[in-house]
Image (cartoon, rainbow, N blue to C red; front, side, top):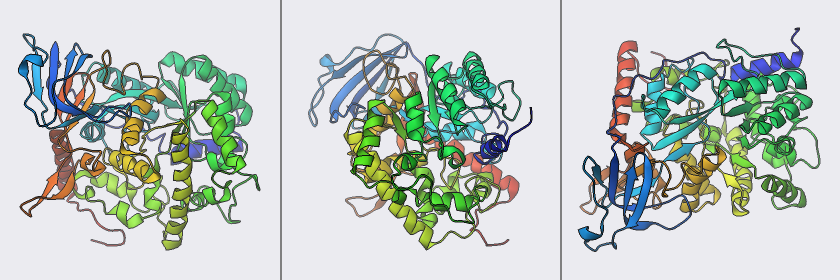
Length: 535
């Protein structure tokens, strides 16, 4: 079949998105984590649940065979706990003393690519960065290493044969399903439906769309919904003039990624983005630079058009996964590039991928300047206004990161996305809900994960600092704190990540990552350098 111009553009889009980048090094057999046990009791922590309930503690949480069987309040702050009122440890069971600590449901990253060959990031590196930050479940939006590779790791994670979050696999629409690289030519509704059915039969959890002709999109989304699978979409600019977020939501799409397609649905005095006349989509500085002007071209906040679009999305129970963190370098490049964790946790190969390039996706720093950053700051204000109001009206907003691009590191980008939701106006408890229950609901897993409740799986984040007071305590590098004796200390960082009742030393996982970085630097005789500095 002869390729059409739009099909060639679509394949180029997949290449630029890093979707067709080949398979990375597989994760090794699990050598970390204690357990599981027939019974696990986590004692004395203060619980911050994903339900908007205020913190409560001390509590003892009982787990048996990877299911929470009891959540018992065992006392009052500052008062010794009466041991007679605590759950009894059975023979062969395990106690974890979490007195004075805080326990939360395991975090869900709703947009988490599992590395890539171009980035030089093996699966172990990516998984340990996530697990070291309390992320126990991820959605891989495009299964970029191939659907068979992703499903293999999903199964191994489910059996806890590898140290990794549980995985939901969303195949990029049109990807080949036979293990080969590339994509199918889906130019008719019939071809789209056949591919969707084959993808479901393969065992995928859903589809990640980028765009296609409207009839193809409508057929594919509807068939995917009929099969009971979930879907996500990055509304790429090469299609969005014909098919925006409202079209997708009406057809049955369950979640949108980023924000593309939403301002276009809010247009009222135009039908197309105000592209400059020399714009070229293949020039990523054009693409990302002018995308930062989109929200100022949309309907004003709380206008009739703005409200009507929001209300329709709410009625459709549509999920927003904004991934604000992945674009933050656009409003402050220096901050993103010099984040304190890069030196010890960013692989040299990944740093090279981040650096200015006309070919690496997201490395579009041809000459990024103050004017672009100012535009993006204005873009964020309007974008955040929509997200916060969507939440206020009962809409579902999740925490997703899209890390591995644009100076955003796996794991570390997660608490930063939480901070950005806080900046948008979310109460810290609403941020936790977005990171836990909302993420679980978006994946259709809220009966298994997302809150600490009897009957749910034993996924927890345990930390010594109160993250509601300071979300920065969730970074693997912790937060800087001036102590009463006038000394400066690093505090925080996740202490334990519990997944499926297995206790992982989160700080040791991050130490493993640091050692991987040291080894690659040693092999390459490499140091992180600023762009433009030779030697």
